[in-house]
Image (cartoon, rainbow, N blue to C red; front, top):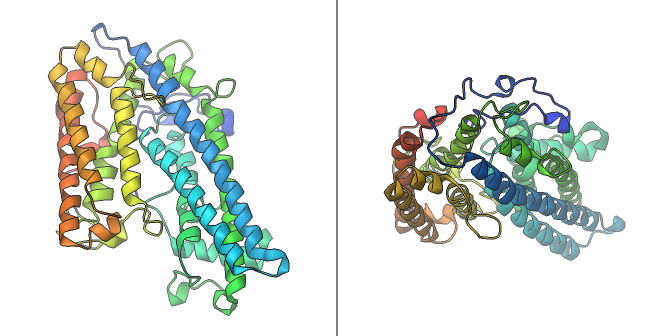
Length: 415
């Protein structure tokens, strides 16, 4: 299971937006306490307002739009695969490629929200997040089994009620980007009846399951968007009002701690899981050291792992430095550091983050290709080491200077 680096202090009494109700902050996973520190002159409300309104909300809205475009493209792929009873392989491939492009566009936006996981996507132990993207809990075999079941009896599989590894962006990747129609299961787990289907029927089954999964993804994206939308759940207003009467956040400090938690996605997921494990720099499922472990790659079929990391870093910088969707910086953690006399620390974080981004950009080609080559794996290792530098500063000087708490999962990380 993925490390739980976010959602540790996520509160939300208002989340009846999607039919659930947290009766208290503690009931939604928020930590007890939340006493405000001695006033240091920093405008915490301004930071919470800026992050909610200018950093997170635009990304949520953009993802919902991209998810809608993916649903449209996947539906077109299903129609092309059916072909009105006369399948046309060329038309089917063209529609599949259009859906692949739509998936990549949606994934770019979601990878930013993986880092900006505050509020709705993190509540209830990340329930909504996992419906959208369940990595690293991914199973192409589970997807293939669901595809075969639905093709044999469409009423037997409701994607909206499926387990996370049979829906969302990860399931759609397995459907859209594999070049052949062979299933991914062991012989004993082979999807019933799959091997007896002809090629056209297999593509039709896969494409039409993708259409259903993409429609489900669109619904989840709309749910998340509504939770942040003015006139909807307006979670930006909830964040802005942290510590106020009736607000699920008992204090501004509690909300700021939750924002700080999200920065540690860089530590466990980016540094450890996305770079360190495939390159063999930390413990992995292959049991290898300083050797590649392709099983640990994120987005292996779409070869999108490096892009994912780039977008994670974009969101990390947006949160740390308050970079809005318009590219303009507003009040955030760096300003807080400056306010308490830690200009040098703010400068170090900016320089080290830029060095990390440069190291990731220097990785040649796709991550899966890079780790199989000695020179390429060395570049991945350099990026991992640059990530360690940023993480070490976050865990020590950053948290100590701002009197913030270390997330539980980060405390257990030893790489």
